[in-house]
Length: 346
Image 1 (cartoon, helix red, strand yellow):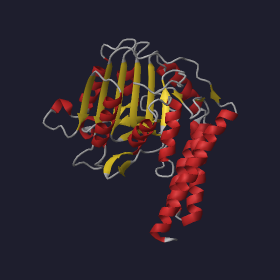
Image 2: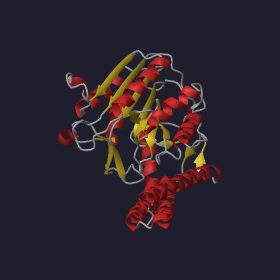
Image 3: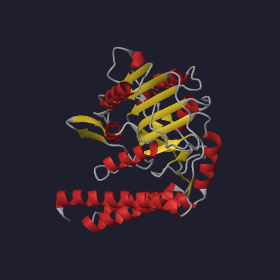
Image 4: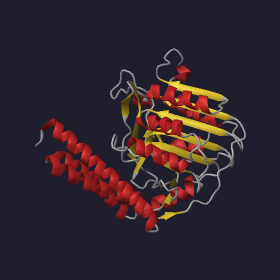
């Protein structure tokens, strides 16, 4: 209706409407009793620190990315400069001369085991992933949206994806009390299968998130159609919104959440920053002339401004930085009801 510039304008406005409404509904949850207070204290890091960094650009494959290896270098350099790290392992798909450093399915799972091996109370583990993610149908009833999230290794065509259930089982399950695991992932909010999702106020979200996402997506679709008349794109968004609404009213959300709390809660202090919600994708962006991930850029920029801000303030700052530029919404989750008003630390 309006040409390419008009369509871009319509997309931008619709995305902002969808994002703002989603944030508004999440904030209203705090006022209407659909959140609960976190109650458990975060332990102190007094021991060794180990870090695992994984970046996959998928060179020569469909869906090749540009910024994931840059992401690894940027996050690794920033954390190493500002925090003490004793051991580091890096898997990237430009290390072709060293097969053990390639981010294959086998090597990633082995790296998870390396990261947690010997961990004891007071130790800190850091996991950073930048690469493609996907989703497959949930088969054990622990996902609110009916889908398991996946990490996509460089050899996924031969070896397959790594499903979030397996990520949790290999990396998270059974970590001792007092161990801190900090995950920084460009991928979606439930890739570690953690049961507690935080609002920017530091409360725990207990409302079915699919309902909020469905309403926001439907309003965004209507806004887009009013602005550019694109029926095909509007219908795609409407189908997505209806999917979220249907899952929120089917009773599956509550049952899935209860199962996740029962089977995925942790004794360790497991905290995840993720680049987007399960229904979104994270951007491979061009920032300052360099290909990088929007979420990693937001994390580093926020911490450079104030290294001592607490976890929930950091989440809010990251969302503010990306607001209006990207549709993705950074999320934070944990393995137990942690009060995250301590300064961010690894």
